[in-house]
Length: 232
Image (cartoon, rainbow, N blue to C red):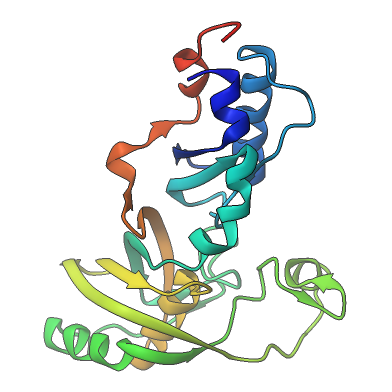
């Protein structure tokens, strides 16, 4: 692709690795395009939907005039695969924080797991995790959480289009979820454990699809620069 192609607009399918923030991934692409493809320093670039540092997978990055498509892309359904750890919770609902409480699991059967899935299909009320970037009174929730402050979080409507269990090897349960914009899979993990009179937290998360875009067609953010030809 030429410099003009990127300025006119491209949708880049990026496979974000673990421990990268979405912002870091976009910055890495930005500087590769500036330094190797010769784009101006102030060209437009942005992503269509944040992925947590502890999640990997599909990140759609728009350049140039296609940054106008970001809102439209963010509104598309997303598919995730991952793993719940049953029998324990963490304050962040994932591995960012240590386990704070353990719960019984002796009563949990494969039948109970599959039956519980049905409770989460369709439109549901979901509270975002306290460790999230949503703002409350102008301050991001994770800042309140790290300061040890208690904050009342309002629940939000979200839709789970598909939810299936793909492996059960307690305490681990693998899943695949297709959901609407604004769904927190970490909250789904927490609520899923609670619905079984136990606890749960998210240990693995990978985004595999956004609308018709598939991570199979994505390139690792670290390899992107190698695809660019200098001076195009």
